[in-house]
Amino acid sequence: MRAGHKYQHLVHGAGCPCHTPEFARLNARLNAGFSRRSLLKGVAGVIAANALATFPALAQTAPRPVLFTNVRIFDGVSARLIEGKNVLVDGNVIKALPDVSDMVSDAEVIDCGGRVLMPGMIDAHWHALLCAIPMQTAMTAAIPYVHLVAAHESERTLLRGFTTIRDVGGPSFPLKRAIDEGQAVGPRIYPSGAMISQTSGHGDFRMVYEIPASDQSNLSHAEEAGISSIANGVPQVLNRVREQLMLGASQIKIMTGGGVSSAYDPIPSLQYTAEEIRAAVQATADWGTYVCTHVYTAEGIRRSIENGVQCIEHGQLADEDTVKMIADTGTWWSIQPFLGGAFANPKGTAQQRQEQQQIAEGTVRCFEWAQKYGIEKFVWGTDILFNPAGTVNQGKQLAQLADWFSNVDILRMATSRSGALMAFSGLRNPYPGRLGIIETGALADMLLINGNPLEDIALIGNPENLSVIMKDGRFFKNTL
Image (cartoon, rainbow, N blue to C red; front, side, top):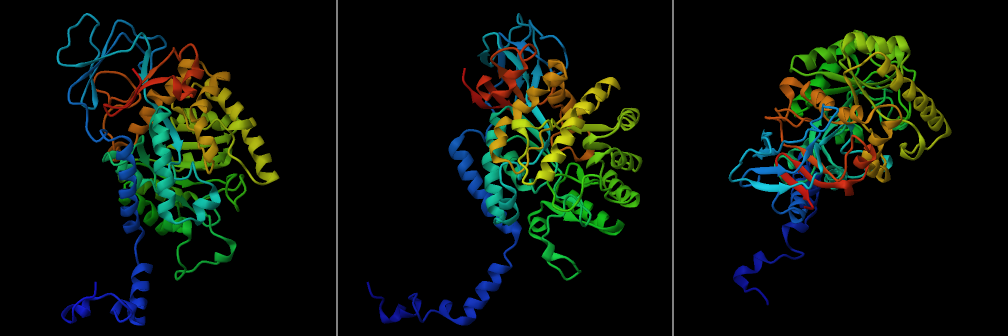
């Protein structure tokens, strides 16, 4: 239909101002300046629509208490299952463990059929944004795409029985918010934000043609995305650490040694001076939390601990004296089952594969030394990285520790002990309340297992063995 002469100026056509060169230039400038934060708002909307379409009722807690009956309980600590008790959940907490003879009124009863109820599992070294995406894609794709992939993987992570993860590198703040608000499905996230790295360090993902950098240089893609943040010298370290705390980091991750996945830094390299490490520790302590660090070698571990770092990530190339130092200082040790084989993150070069083998041999030594020196603050994490096919093995990686640890020790590492590490973030703890344990007052994150993992640890590696997955008092799976 043709518009009348009176309204002809409203018709969109070649004469419209939006077709002029001036408008095109203005539009290009506006699009170029469209911030990453604004883009992520759109991503959150897509996440929300997808998540709520799958789980339309997850935004609300159960309208009345839930009572788990006919159940055996692994509480996260005890070497024997607790029998003769029920578990009462009210809201998002465990209200009580009443005797089976006690009457509980106005509760939804879940008959567990003699199955084992245990705390939700915790992966203390996870990369929510980087685990399920190839490295080349993560470093080149549009940032919203990376977040959408992560949102999809977060749902699968929860459905593998991992109700909490500590994210030790990557821009997981928007994903965490979406999950916490019920707009997406996934585990609790303890975010570190961008990995703080020196130039040429383990978090420097720049291309060689971007060197040398200057004050006028643009941030690299990885820095723009919030994957890493390059800082050199005390003032820059203070600034970058404080930025991540401002964004919502519950702990800070720095790099004090070389790695396998990075392009430039050999594993034996020492990264960050004593002064730089102390600066990161001071800025973090001022906010009531702690610093963890990526490091493999004995010398790097010692420098880190001597300057205040309170949690070692990896550490497989430690010597026995350094392991004893970890024990004597009460430092947390988050180690990964880097044992080679089918579960290893894929590596492209022969040198990287050789380094993987050295670390695998060191992993076995460290498992043995950790037990010899009775390290209590010893936790695990997978560190599945740039490995979309490997995320399904998250629980299987935990189960394979049975070659070195008792079943109850493995379960403690993935529940109560890792829960204590989550609480170590102190004033920055995003989820005040006890995690990794079944006791009165603890947060209601629990799994119901078809079988007894204290007898058969392999059960936790297969999500089909999970009859119920509850997080924050909400059912995310219930086949009963």
